[in-house]
Length: 82
Image 1 (cartoon, rainbow, N blue to C red):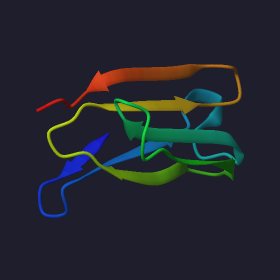
Image 2 (image 1 turned 90 degrees about the vertical axis):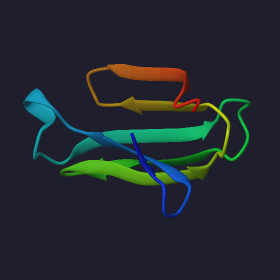
Image 3 (image 1 turned 30 degrees about the horizontal axis):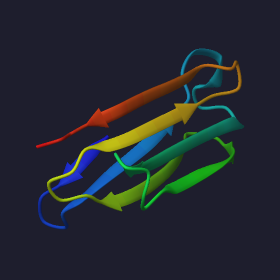
Image 4 (image 1 turned 45 degrees about the horizontal axis):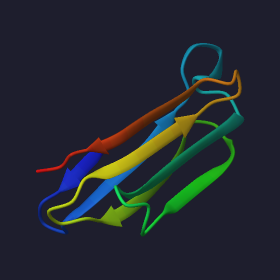
């Protein structure tokens, strides 16, 4: 996750790791405001990463999720609330 103070947007990517690093495989990423609005997602067969996806969430928390083929999903809810 990244935040750009110049655009006021949060950004997320999902990188492959281990056996999925630098190989074409399923990768997905999703981002939204903490209340679920503004959801953006990207998924498919990518070599390096899925995304980027962006959401503008001034003075709000965001939710992000990323997944790779082995069923590993990382979800972070109500982060970057400043």
